[in-house]
Image (cartoon, rainbow, N blue to C red; front, side, top):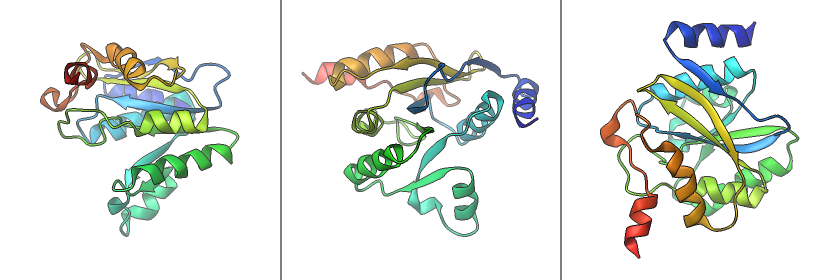
Length: 190
């Protein structure tokens, strides 16, 4: 019933569910982009309901005040200190090691505001935990949401990022002025 409710609400809101967690994937880092609105979380949560899977989420620890904190934790949120990114990689990596089945959704932009470069944490968490990256999409232009494909990291961050980001070219954010792909910026830095 939970799954049917998620599908119904998404359909009611005009969203089309595309793809899902690939067969056999028990643990993964799911990246979700573009991320420019608080609505992305709501639509994403409904998507996981519709897919019949649960995901954990990384959310800045400042959001864990009462009464919101207990609600966020119940929804699977993991509080993170954004000032110590290496600790986050270790913390989430350990969670993967002690879990048999876990998805962690990360917005690589790290914020809803415009950024020049995606944060690298999602990549290093996947590498540290030895899990794949599932490339998720929130396309407001086509009103499509879901998981497009599984990506196995190679250890070459810049090459992998360019390949991952190529999927997002032409996708529409809720606030397009706040969405940027960083692979081109990295290439131009050389």
